[in-house]
Image (cartoon, rainbow, N blue to C red; front, side, top):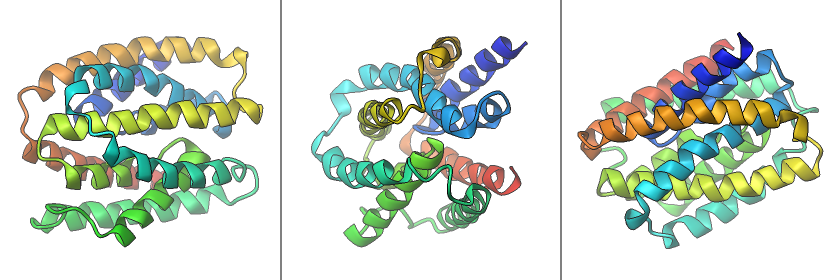
Length: 238
């Protein structure tokens, strides 16, 4: 039954990742902490996400602008490298609630303010997004919502948005996984969970990518804002 649930949540993770550009780790973290410690769960969720991310990077490879990715990644990764060590000493529940409240507020703001997110953010705001995202990625393996807003503000097409954010996540996953391995968080005993989850993730991503062909950037933005709010509610309640 556990393996079937991993495939199911992997499938849902792939669907969400394929349609919104982020969220695979969020879906996996609904279930994985019930069978694994939170630090290991975050690592497994990140690696299951690789299946979705790599599929999307290959599909949208011609829309990728690597120069838009380098600086955000350096900021994000620097903070994640620091916060990955804090998962056992910080009040994780309180931090999740704070993140949940922030995401709900952002979801409401972008949903009802039609002009929000139509232009690139000032570097100060973009930098705050990168720092907060890196911090929570190191703790929970979840850094997507705010980075989605950042890359969305720079994109003119759905393919451009998906290609850039997935390349960002692919680089990040390699980096943060290396840190977790060196810190003893990820071990070979977790490989079966990762491989089984990847099966569902690939199926979900392929289906989502086909659906995405029929959606314009405006529709994708609405999905993203709604899912950011749903993510915030999840953090508050669980």
